[in-house]
Length: 361
Image (cartoon, rainbow, N blue to C red; front, side):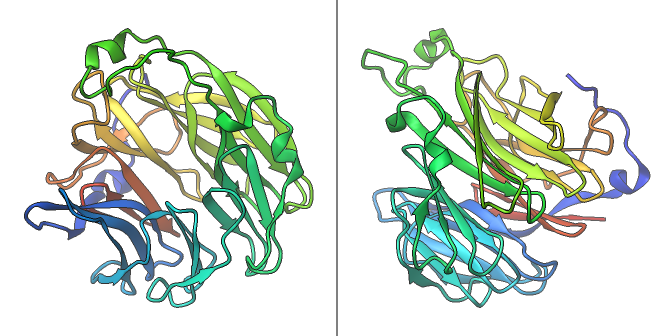
């Protein structure tokens, strides 16, 4: 594990301050994704949950860097967001529907539904985009989402499509992009209680490696090359910079000795190496500034069976990816999952417990 050592003076002076906190009795606001396409405009999406009642889906929209947030009701429970610029964005919902906004999240119109069950979209222009989803399927559009066609290379890796999913799309430049996923066959042949009811059984279960997928393009998505490798855990996030740097995040099951692991990527050579892992820190998102500064955000764990009880939010930062400094975070910030989003040097964090924080001096 990398040591927590003192960082530079500017980093030491920064802290995460709350900008928005949902604090209503008997209900919880769970943020599931957030995007800041510019330093002033941002959108966070999630749902308000009250026991025994239907979920209310909402977007929180800001046009003043988070000083004020406007609530916009959404037509469906959100799953993921992507913005091309500060006005034009897309929303994928749990039903696989696709919506578009042209007013920075203040309005949403339904687009034709992509084939299959889509989890995430990514657009490199108003017309050109890709959709990643289940059953080993990726689709592309070149007419702003009116029509979608399969990316044939997505079916090339081995593994039963019924247990194969593509989950992440990232472009470092307009030419270089990567889509990641995994194949995860059923591992248990007997009926079991959920981990939170039967934690001892969850801990007795031995994690096993499985296939990880990647699709890589060097020509702006005209062609894709598929690859697969055996590893533990699932790739949950990839962040890339144009100069060849990359930061990835792998999440593990409760049976594994670490909850998560951050790793360095050189997308020029394809080489990677672990930069951070800790038994008591469950990383749920990563961020990579253009200058190479890396951030790891998540929650402190309170037991081996993870992700059940919110823990204190923790953020680590590093310039060299070897020594990591813990940053001050608002004491009220608890979460099982967090999302990072930024524009330039400005960075925000949303939690699944209804808080949005900004990194400030």
